[in-house]
Image 1: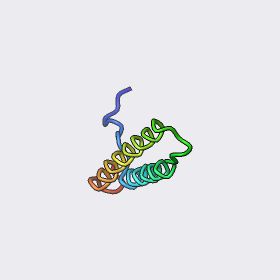
Image 2: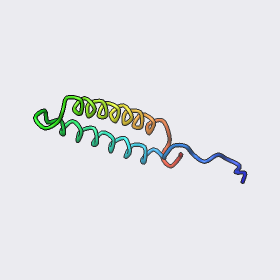
Image 3: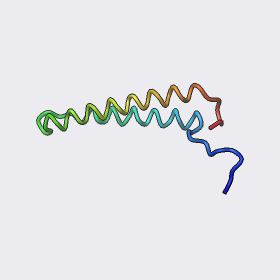
Image 4: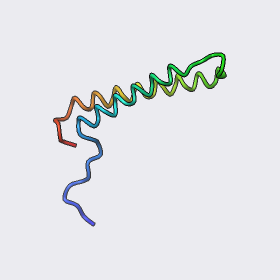
Amino acid sequence: MFYSSPAPSTAPRSQARAFGMRLLSEAAVLDDSDHPEVLTSRTRAGFRRTAATLRRRSHDKILDSLDRPEGVA
């Protein structure tokens, strides 16, 4: 099938902002899960890396949401 315009690859601004905020909350949960008496140092390091990745993706999504008008994908 041929479409006259390609499907949008990103979400509208409000969805991008909501996704960014969800990523931030997931990063906070990972930070709160860092209990040294229960987890190995390798697991804690993995949590820290994942939290940093989530924060970076969140920052990108929030910046992306500022660049596009509402309702435009």
